[in-house]
Image (cartoon, rainbow, N blue to C red):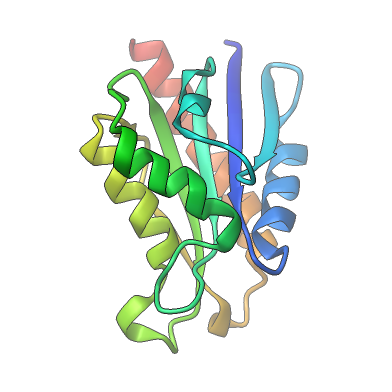
Length: 157
């Protein structure tokens, strides 16, 4: 079963991009086609692409999306497109020492996509930088499980 995945990356320091690259290498196996796109210069029209979406984003400042993700996030809020055809997953990065806003970058995208009718596949992953576990290691494990859920969902219709 052929699956297309667009990984949309929101990052400030490059960690989310590293995670996305690791996930792309792990998932792009001939049966699954993966393209990683930095959120720079993207708007809500990106969700017109074929396939499923994986939001891979860090959290910045006071629970904000990264600078390179702000235009996409704000366009989703303002344009409010119907995303009922969209299936997506979220791999969020954060640091639990910021308890009030832990992993809010991923949460913000998850919330707006749900509001616009998109349906999340699997649970939103919340990586904790203070856990001592490298996010790219967690990303590899999580994305394999997520892909199996995506394939199950696609097969079910």
